[in-house]
Amino acid sequence: MNGRTELEAEVTQNRDVLTDLGIAVRAADEKGATGPVALRVTEQFGLADVFLVVSGSVERNVQAISDGIEDALGAAGVRTVRREGRESGRWVLLDFGDLIVHVFHQEERDFYQLERLWHDCPLIDVGPMLEAAGEAPAQSAE
Image 1 (cartoon, rainbow, N blue to C red):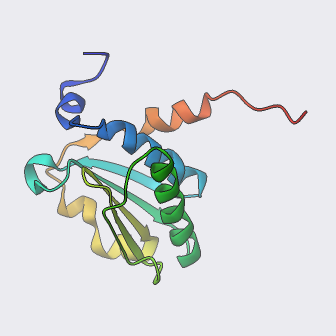
Image 2: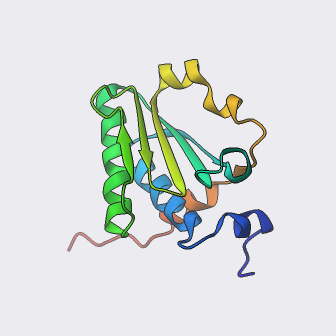
């Protein structure tokens, strides 16, 4: 099964949502997002396979994170189905079909506590996705 767990295999459909998740996690990290949490919501939600929740420190950071995620996934050929909340910069929802990304201002994340609401959903470890980005060869300044 190419080294993927059974849980990861279940999440995979037409396009590999875990690949898209990795792109989103790395793009968010590059823009300074904190606290990435990925939840497998297939059985509980039905309209998507994965939620990614990240935080930004201020409104402009939330907007930059959401723009970075959308740009990175767009470059990979993933179309944004729906976008909400970008103007306020407090809670941006990006719907990519099988992947839904919530970019919160930390105050909103603390208030809404989505991870607690979806506590019965299995977690997807995003650590290796971030580590893979760190292993990329450095480009020379020459």
